[in-house]
Image (cartoon, rainbow, N blue to C red; front, side, top):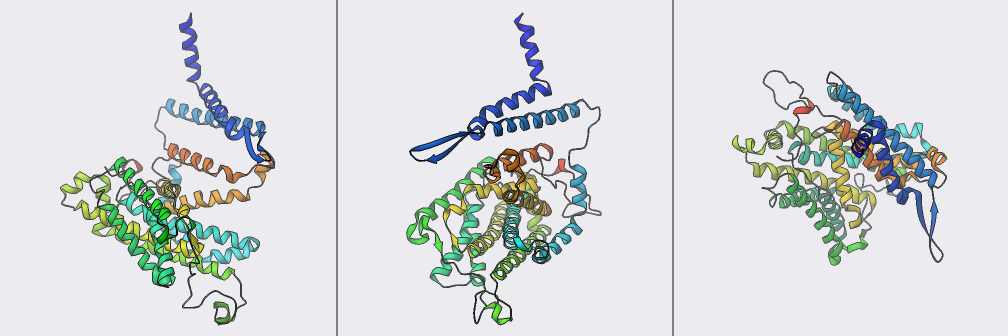
Length: 456
């Protein structure tokens, strides 16, 4: 009598409703501590408050989402014909329109400060800061795309080169009195040198082993910066980092400043607009150099290495030099971005270069599509811009309560977005490719034929 009952239970949980019940139960168990209970520091200890309404809403969302997701999978499994992947028409259209779409984005990028001044003058500073942040991650994503997307070398320690560039500029400015434009190429060169230093020990590693070593390298750099107090000032960081000048003109009030020279009324926003155009130009240079390198023999060697390292060696390609060039060039762009980060912030510390930064940059490259330049742009806008815009979502407080802060759940939303993208578009938003070289006519490569970028 027990066998039919057990079989019936198994059949129930195999249905979409049963699967959604299981997911809702797991969400209920985990949500008790994350959503249902909240602890605050109070006089004499901790004060515990309950938020059962928020927990029930989260369980309902999980149940409905899982039910919808499972129903779609069941329907797809029973369909007699193979259906196109979700978002495939959008991705293919975006890939075909990549040329003019890129030029449109470039035009919007140059006109963005003026558009913000027209349509959102009250939030000018906020949106300019957000645009600078997005462009910084776009530049970092394009730099890492050389290593991961083109060469197929999984790098989890890319933030180390970001830190090397930032600290190189800060220390050069502090001890040698160098300005931003003088120290910028030096910071990139030092980051490239460290990329070569990292490349030598990992020449024979691939896949997960390479990821572990690069992860360790990123943590080593952070710990060295944290503990070498006499050189890096340790956890106190470095402050007073000089700002970039416009042909020797500083953005200060009074005589000799930028506003005085051009006869303008002094406004602090001028410096932020200048910073925006600096990172925009740096990002454009990164994109241009990457695209040009992709068409050169070294770029084709990167792609051959990504697809099959053994076949790459059989073709007579020096895989040692190929890996070193990929690490060095990717690290150089990371160093440039780090130098800009230092001058923009005016203060740096080891806490700014944690592993989460590497994970975010890698997520931008993977979700955008390995080897896709336009995919990195879209992923950066969605991930970085979307998470930052949570601060302005007020209607959620009307649903979940006045004490609800969306920014506290940004990592949860970030992880959920990654899971959804990996389910529907496992090879990124822009997964199709156009070959670098072709005999007669270039034919777009489908997503199923694009290398995973794992280095094997």
